[in-house]
Image (cartoon, rainbow, N blue to C red):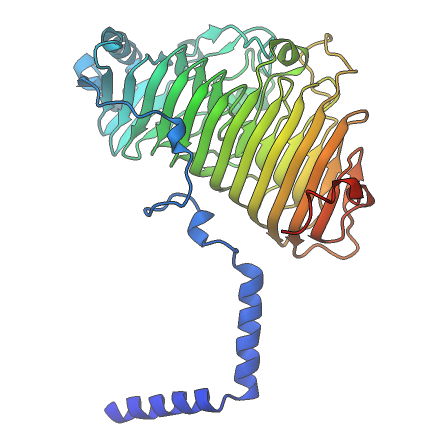
Length: 474
């Protein structure tokens, strides 16, 4: 055996000293393959949570809170975690009790291992909801336990149906200093019943979210699994200082409108290190719907989305709009990893939306088998009522998309602007789309900007030299 080892070592060293052409060709082929298929940044930056420290984080948007003075279990309020007993009243009693401590050190409600069936319940300020390992909050399938609440002012009606809408499973309104976290516990919306109502066209009111926070401040949502939401999964609206970090969000890939995270008319929002599979956008930034959003004029601003990975066969990794009537600005999207999806990055708008999208930086995007890597779209003809203004067109200014690699894409980017809308400072830089046939061309209409270091060759609309000074190669 020792002789065999010596012989092998001698042969290996001889090969290194006198490499054959076959070996050199093999090494060259391997290096070429790796250069095309490995991301420019470390894989852990693109693939979700990682135990080590990150070079950058926006988690400081959340102001730390001290340990809660009162810590109790849902069992202290009569909760039974057998998966069949209703705990709706137990959750409501628990939060009502914790309200006593809003200004006296705060309260924490622990959810131990078990399956805790419940209808909708509200949160309170200076409060922590903590799901221990093995804990599952299971949504009731009785629609009566998802009461109807009024429409959001910036939407004017339910998003899917006229009138009010179902409340979210976990709900908060005008609250602050809230933590929703745990040891990778689960919130399961049991959304199939709601999806079937949508598919069968028997839905009477707009479906509820899994978690919605309205007009709230200083919120941390972390280290949990959310699955099977009836509608958009996490929806902070009119909120400030929200951090959503280390989450796993799952829905069947055909489940309708199960967006992962939708910050809406909110500011100082940090969305990082999340893994999402859904039947709609992984992340969608919104700010109100047509004339209602225009009148409320509550923009989404100062939002950071980074280190998101996931798949959605019908929509995009990160979307902006289409409800963007209150304006969207100061957005950073970086280190996105998307595969087997309809689009990587998508900006959606239309006539009637009005509003603006400004000062957006999208960079370091990695895609595999994404049909259309970059897309601007219009024409959904999706309006709340007949009061929308066809003359209200969106404005776009200073949008930078850079450092994008896509493998096995089937189409070149599609950039469909809105007739009459304005574009200033649209820049595409260092973009490589592997697998797109040379015969495929960028499709551009009603857009204007500049592109450099882009393959395939961009459309003529992106050769406007007036933007070249700030869109030059770095």
